[in-house]
Image (cartoon, rainbow, N blue to C red; front, side, top):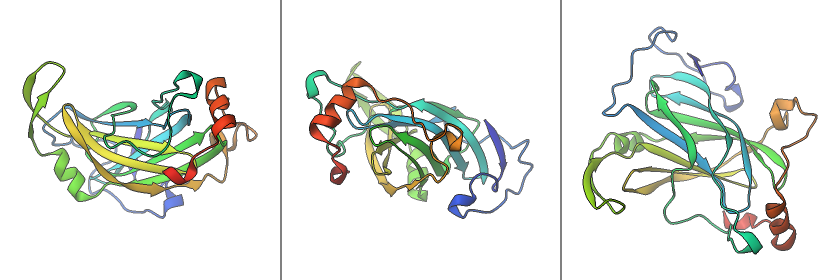
Length: 222
């Protein structure tokens, strides 16, 4: 994980700028908790491999490759799952806690959609109201242990679907998710693994392949 003045690696999205302090020794973020969280998941059977998640925080610092790998997904046997549409409430997804990184202004994801297969880039803009919500304490009832707590919406959850579609929510332990927005990614011109795999994507599991061959990909549902 590295942080730089805004420039390298993000020119695809036309961003530029700079931070007013030394980017190699930034002050710690002033948050009421140790870290916020970014996680990703995919609809049933619509398998995803995340190549990189990059963050620009509200200080203007860039953090590259803060997360990657498999996204959370359900693959019920016998085609009993349902990948159509987005849930009313999002879970957190598989991800990582962002320690030492201030609240996000932009989140970039490059991922392989394995059922197509195709590789996409998407930029997720985090509005100011989301950062305000992440700093706001809430009294919440936790059903799993019957306790009432004061909690924060510290999690950014990102759903990734075929066609380059992404949707984001902000949520927290024992707190309902709030939708941030729907975003449309672009095909990554270099292909999978930034052009280093001769166009080869990761393999799709047999259970997901069977579902897609039987039911197709519900592009219009996302």
